[in-house]
Length: 166
Picture 1: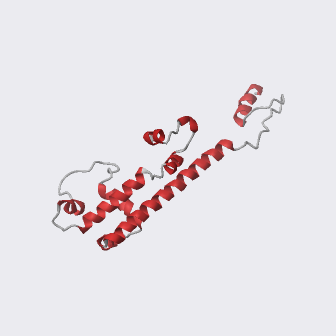
Picture 2: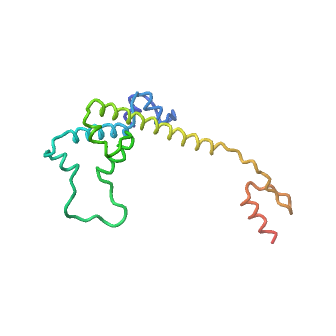
Picture 3: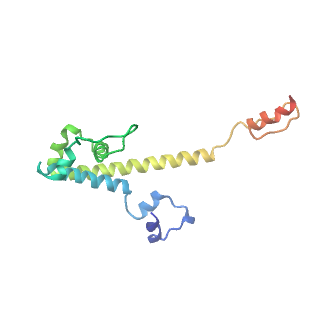
C-alpha cells in the first residue's frame, strides 16, 4: 500500500482511506487477487491427469504424522474449501464444474469480484460505525450532586464525588 500511495502522490497527511487508494489506482485488494489465483489453480489441478504429482498431493492423505493438540493449523485444502464457498459450488459438484474451463474461469472472476465488493461494504460499514460512535452525543448530562449541586461529567464522577458525603 505504501508504494501505491507514493505512485499516486498521496500523503498520510491527506487522510485518504485504503479503499480510496485502491479505487484511485483502479486495483483490487490482495485478498481477492489471491482468491482468484487459488481458484484458478484448483481448477487446473482438477483437470490434470490422475497420476500427476500436484493432483496426487491435492487428493492425498498422509499415512503417518501427528497433529498437535488445540486448533489445527489451516492447510491449503482448508483455505481452498472456504474459497470455493464464495463460488457457491458444492464440493460434490466441484470436479464437474471445474472440468468446463471457460465456465470455471468465469466463476473465479465472478467470485473474486463478489468477495471484493463484500469486503468493501464490510470495511465501509465498520468505518461508519466507528465514526458514528465517535460523534455520538451523550444525552444524559444531568450528573449533579444532590448535596452541593456540583455538576459532574459522568455517572462515575458523580459516584466518586458522593463518597465524600458518606
